Image (cartoon, rainbow, N blue to C red; front, side):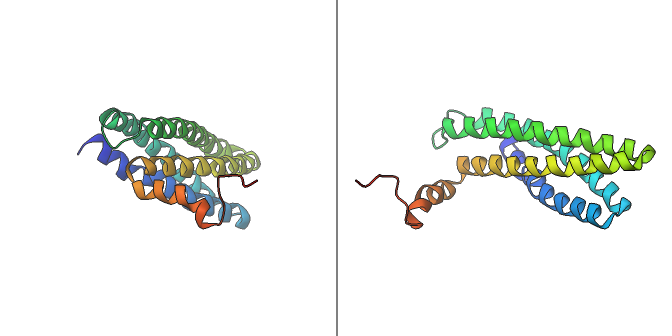
Length: 163
């Protein structure tokens, strides 16, 4: 298996997992379920750790495809920048989730507020992950490029101004 394959397979874990964990943590907080809150925070930490693998294989995958025919260096760079930002957010939220777990065992009220903070940052991280994944898909999935190029026309919008 090469880095490109590993990156493509593992990159789905944080994207899909973040959506699931957002729902679980939201349910935990609304139902005041400490058990589900703890499980959700552990899953956030797992997502942060799994994203390290995705990020590292992404760097290796970039080296493999960069400069090859059929791969746009501009798309690769845009994906790289978006992925770096998403990576920072998911790692920060992983650390906050860890702090929420530890602090929450001694100070439940503070743990609750840190869990809310975790949820809010996780939502932002989720949006950034989806954005980075979409950009990454455009690198090796030309049908996504085609769709995003023609979508405005399909919706009756034009890029030209009619005078």
